[in-house]
Structure formats: structure tokens, C-alpha cells
Length: 476
Image 1 (cartoon, rainbow, N blue to C red):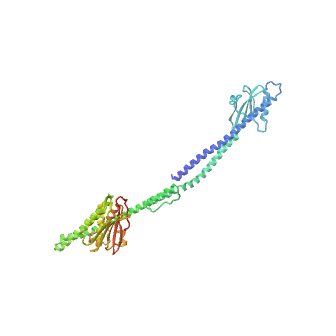
Image 2: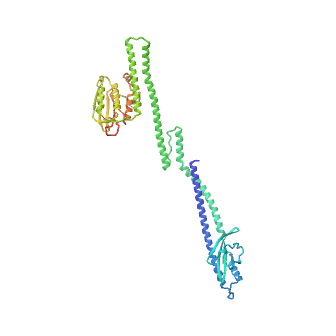
Image 3: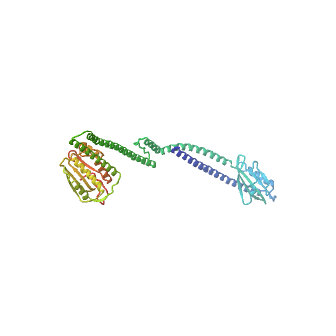
């Protein structure tokens, strides 16, 4: 069953119970009030008749010492037909509770008479045929006689009004329920509209339409739920786009990897087959073997770089306090014998929080790329200085530079700006990709400035010992 129908049914049940109980209470209250008023009037009438009977008896001639039965009947007859009201129903009994006078139609039994005494005035409601009466009984002491005066007052109209009240209230309740059903159906439809919109949005997203959003139609809890759903949908869409990008990147990576393997392997197989199947002179044999060796070293470097990327992508760096002098001392010793380019080092002394071997790998890759981009005799500047955001490393060359439209691609695996130049120097296009992964686990990133034909500058910022990790997106 739909939630709106449940809400509608629950409301109708509550309305029916509320109207039923309230109607019963109201009609019954009116009935009891009217009946109580009729009882009061019946008791007052009984008292008046008793007083009138006593007054009439006192006017009997004094020759009677005891009130005779005939006089009692005469007085009762006068009381029955006297006054302006309709004919009264009376019954008068003597001391032995024998009936002396009874009106036609007086149908009450003697149960109430047997309970009447001098101190009490009793009444009860009785049914005779289709009519209701209030039966009263009172003791009258007159001229040394004890008599019992009983009356019957017709109160059928009170009970008729109660039946009419219940009948009318049932019709009113039915009409109210019908009107309430229509109104509550509209209200339930309005209240559950956000749920229907969310359901529709869920189905659309399940069908693959991740850009679909639920329309917010209220500011209450359901409106907040809609807003939260749309926020979740945005996050889900972003994650899906990210996964799709990663899938595309992996496919591109595999394609590039296969391409990068194909060229050297083809050459290696070709030259190896030539050495195997032909008798070559010493010069051609050396050239073929050298080409096989060179391409083999490039494949080895490629596999090692790939392994490094995989390892760094699955681990967090364990940071230690390391002086900048140790890092630059290592680099100066490593490139001390380099003759084709001039590498200049300058740095500020400072303790850093780094994984030293990984940072050395980043700097070695950046310096190697700078060497590959520089002409013979070129200058490469490797610097380290204290910046506002942390300690900044920068590697600047004055070589071929990188076109602006290529800058956003250079950290992708196997990407090379000049493939022929990179391959001639055993480049695999994985160095900057590895640098990006290492800096990522250091909560840093690689910054790049380059002008084609003028050179490039690569930099990154690491935390100084005792400070939080920060990243630098510019170089001073």
C-alpha cells in the first residue's frame, strides 16, 4: 500500500473514532441533562401534588376523624384532571399499600412502592409500550392516615430526541468523513510529493541518468532529505566520473605501455635475429649489440619506474627529520662527474620532515629531465630555500621548454613532449608520473613553469620540521 494511502486511511480511522466518541458523548450529555431536568420536574410535581393532596384533605369537614377512602378517590380525581398540564397519571395506595385510586393507563408495578418510606422520595424510569415515564413515589401523612402517592410523567420526547440526535450525528459524521477523506487525500498527496519525486529520481539514477536531481518542493524534513539526496547524487556522479576517468586513464596507460614496449622489442628482436642469422662484420655486430643493450636498459628503467609508481601509490610516507644538507650533499656527489651540463646547487640549511629516499628519487628524476631537456654545456640550477609555506625545492633548466598546451599532460605515465629526443636518452615518460605519486603521499604537488625555447622550472614544497604539511603552487 502506498504511503499516501496509509496516511489517508490512518487519518480517516482517527477522525471516525474522534467523531464517534465525541458525538456519543455530546448527544448523551444532552440527553442526560434533559432527563435530569425532567426528573427534577417530576419530583417537583410529586411534591406539589403531595402538598395539594394534604391541603385538600385538611378542607374535609370535621365530622370525619379519619379521611375516608371515598374522599381520597375524590381528591385524587381532582388532582388528576386539575391544572393546565395534560392529564396526570396517579396512583394512591393506603397504609397496607392497597390501591385506592389509579388513573387509566398507569402501568407501573409496585416495586417502587415497596421501597417508599417517610424519609424518602423515590423515582425510576420505566418503559410502557413505546413510551418512557418517570415513576415517582412519596408518602403522604394526612388526618392520621398514611397514604402513598405515585405519579407517572411521560418523558418519551427526551428519548426520542436522543435517537434523533444519534441519527443526525451519524449522518453528520458520515458527511464529515467523506469531506475529510477528500481533503486528507489532497493533503496526503501534497505531503508525499517529495517522496514521489525522490522515488522518481532514484529510478532515473538506477537507469543510468546520474545527472538527474530531485526537485525540492518544501523546506521541512522531507525538503532536507531531498537536499541531502541531491548532495549524495552529486557526490555519486563525481565518483562515477572519477572512476570513468580512471578507467580511461588505465586504458590509455595500457595502450601507451604496449606502444612503448612494441618499439624497443621490435628493434631488439630485429637486431638479435640479424646477429643470429647473418655473419656481420665487427662494426655492424657492435652496432647491433649496442642497440640491443641500449633498448634493453630503457626497458629496464621503464619497468623499475613502473614498480616505483605502483609501490608509492599504495603506501604512505614515513616522515623523519632530515637536514637539507644531507639531500643536497647526496645530489652533489651523484652529479659530480657530469660533464655535458653544468649543475649549480644552492640551498638554505633547514631540517625537513620527509621520507628522504623518496625525495631523493624526485629530485634525481627532475634533474635527469632537466639534463635531457638541456643542450650540451647548458646550465641547471638546483635550489632549496625557506618559503612562507615551507621548504621549497626548485630545479630550473634553460633548455627546450614545454609548450603551454602540453603542461597539464606531462605528469601522465609514458607522456613525452619530444619522444625521439627522450628515447635517444633512454627516456620512458615515467619520471614525472613517479614524482607526482611520491609528492602526493607527502601531501605536496609538483609546480611547473615553462616557456618553449627558454626552459622550465619544476618545484615543490615540503614541511619544515615541527610544522604541518603544506603545499606550494608557486615559486619565489
